[in-house]
Length: 79
View 1 (cartoon, rainbow, N blue to C red):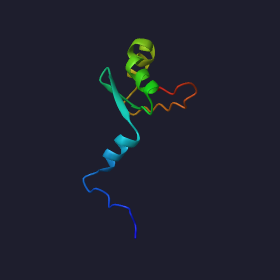
View 2: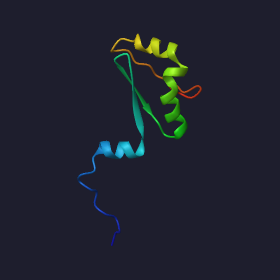
View 3: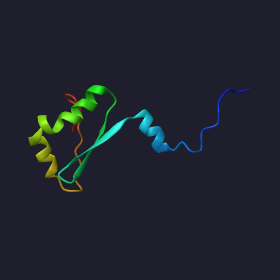
């Protein structure tokens, strides 16, 4: 006999994602920048980004809608 419970049908994949991978979205000049925030330090960095990295945000704001930026995380991996 198994002690496993059936999954809650009201618990969606999005709910699971929100719990397992906390994330936030930063709106910048009409564009959205999506961040995974696995810890308090990453969350703090996204909150202080406008103050610390205005030139980088200006650069990102110039991207076309089809552009993709892949941050390989050489330092903190904020972009």
